[in-house]
Length: 252
Ligand code: PGA
Image (cartoon, rainbow, N blue to C red):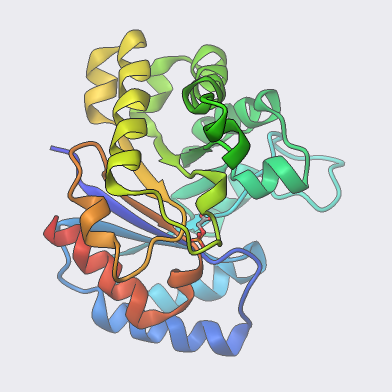
């Protein structure tokens, strides 16, 4: 069976003080939730601080982005090996904000995915359609295209060491969540695409839902057969909400 994951994507939020407070509450309250892997993804400059605050608690550490390059003259970038050095196990790649605001293309994301795997990180590959794409009936063309770009470039075997996050762009930070039916429909279709390449990898890969997950809607989203947890933005900055979402995943 697939162990659920709840990942907190803090985006570009927080400071040393607020992070001390948030992590204190998470470390105290996430103990013993063995049925779910919990993960926090702070801004890169706070990774070391968060690693220290995690101590030996069972909360994993992830980054929000990584370079496709190993080292060298790439001002402002962080290499996957550096993230591993700081204690990261995961890295979010291809988030819609990276695609839309920073112009990342499928080929860039595939290169980052390959570099992350090579360094020993578990990529969380984000895919998702805009409202316009959904309303024009193109959800699976878009989501499938984003997924196949990485499957074709990196090979399906690499997905045995990766996580997929379905994040409809229209649901991110908007308070508008996909219905459980909408989420399950896309998650099932995503798994079917991976299965076209390798059925065993498809059965094992965790597919997270992201987009306005909160303490009130988490349980019904996670109850779906192909929803293996969540990638949580806004609600991951509030300790009580994030803890409630993690508990919902553990009980799903
Ligand atoms: P949200 O963000 O939960 O604030 O909608 C999710 C994400 O962007 O990963």
